[in-house]
Amino acid sequence: MGTLLIEIPQYSLGETLLVWAAAAVPMAVLGWIVTPAVVADPQNPGFTRLAMLAIGLIWQFILVMILLYKETHSLRWSTVRPLLYLNTPRSPNSREPIRRLWWVLVPFIVLTGLFDLLLRGRLNNVWVSIFPLVAQPPRFDFSSFLSTPGARTQLVGNWRVMLLFVISALFNTVLGEELLFRGLLLPRMAAVFGKWDWIANGFLFGVYHLHQPWGILSSATAGTLFFALPSRYFRSSWFGIIAHSGQSIYLTILILGLVLGLA
Image (tube, rainbow, N blue to C red):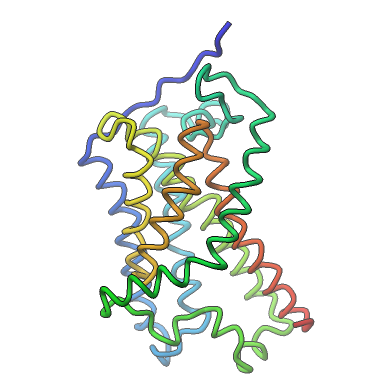
């Protein structure tokens, strides 16, 4: 006997773009307008930009909850879980939940890691060579900032920064971007985009990165191939959440080492 599938309401093109804008515009405003207004040195935002963008990511979680409540008038886990694709992965043919499909996550995690290590930077360079105006300001490179002596000094014993980074990472790849794009939007895009909804979802995810436009091409590529495709194919947004979280886990461990004075 087949498993009963929950019918998920579908968005129009206008509704899809409105939800996209409700996520993308606040992030751009926080990154490019609010951050320079609140830091002493706009060319050296340090951890302030991270904190401002964390506010935007938290807003995305709130937005998802608001839209779900409008649909169901309930935020019970049993109600919202299937509506956000937070399911055991399902067979693409029978639509039955199959636990062994979790193993498919392994190659996607590996591929995402290889992409971040080998291709993301190259794609960013290609994108910037086409559109030089979107080049990353040198002081906005968080990885380079962490390698500076000043940043390392600020981090030793600074558990508040550690907490900030954990909150940012949690709302980035679990409760924010992925919950909104793969949990909320992706299951509601089929009526407009049909079988290509995962490509449209990855594209929207890429251009959502107005707060870091130098990464639009690489974000669209990863969002399409490693987050949206498996989430759509197996009807489980956990694929996007877990694959996307690899970078956050790595950086969290790095930050923890710096806070403990080990790195």
